[in-house]
View (cartoon, rainbow, N blue to C red):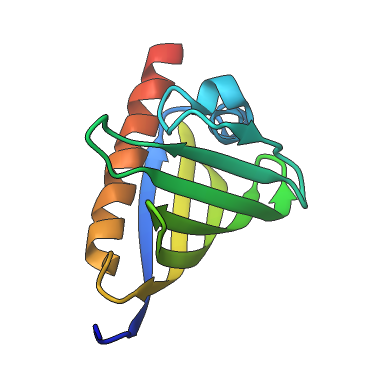
Length: 147
């Protein structure tokens, strides 16, 4: 039997975008805008108590499933959600994520905080933080294209 274990971790990623908090918030809250930089959702119900769900991956597999529930939304200021990430039928992690949007000179400071439980070595906090950096870079490029 394989050893089972949990690694708990918190990481914070910050970005400053040359876009208003309204535009950055819309990039998270509007399904068409979010699909430009994040996986296109199969379900997108952006409200407290709502759900975001996407499932997919390369043709050769595996299928990754992101399943989030929104817990707190303060328009243009804060988004808090929990989510699970699975690879095929294997649960990789469970996390709570907080997105803070702070008006800054010439744009918006975004603070992304994730607190996660990573299971059995299927994913690591370091890999997740790297992926988050890539996603926030993609968000920045999407915001630049909208200008």
